Image 1 (cartoon, rainbow, N blue to C red):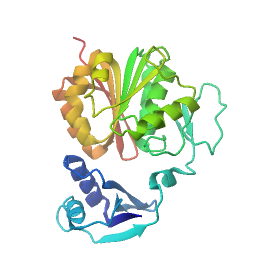
Image 2: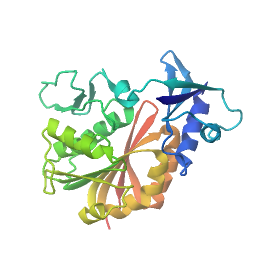
Image 3: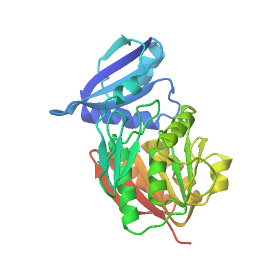
Length: 300
């Protein structure tokens, strides 16, 4: 069985707790956290949900309570039936169109529209089916960069999840070397399955994808395949701040960095970290409450 803790509060309170969660580098990885609005017609009423594989004790409840500044909302604790909640939450998702891309689960047909790049990404144990505003925003940003005439010969998707952003970059720049990584071991099988379903070749040559497990940029394969003229990272604001110097060192002169997973309210902190690392803003877009940043390295 699994358990869930839910807290209801105004949007600003829940967003503050999510920011505190990202800054809590000693956070228990067995506590999976998310925040969302309760209903479309009540945009200021939000909920914080925490999932655990065991009944929460005082340590877990205190850790979640510590995320809130001021008065802690009341917790609702419930036992859940044995279900893969990530897969369940993604089942039946509607297709999305972002930039040149049409992304859908196997329950929906492919697009036959000329010029559209179609990907089938099933619900899985990894994040990144395209429906989240951050992933869709990255697809739109990559499309914009290609339309600006940028040519990339070596790119990396850090925190790849399902592999979707790596696949998208490979479709736009089909001769490039492609590297994908994630901190979660389960993503290896997910990416390999999705690659097979979408005709993406795995391998070490141009036009093929290498997948590895790594904590951020810390892996000898990632170091050996650099420098990169494009790095994509759709993760969280806290890790983006911490990794900014690593991204900068791994980029070729004039290289591009696409960052997502940050709320608009977190954008200033991420941009400051990038500026300190020698990166400048080349473009940005906002999708809902989320910012997608295009940073560039200096031409040394």
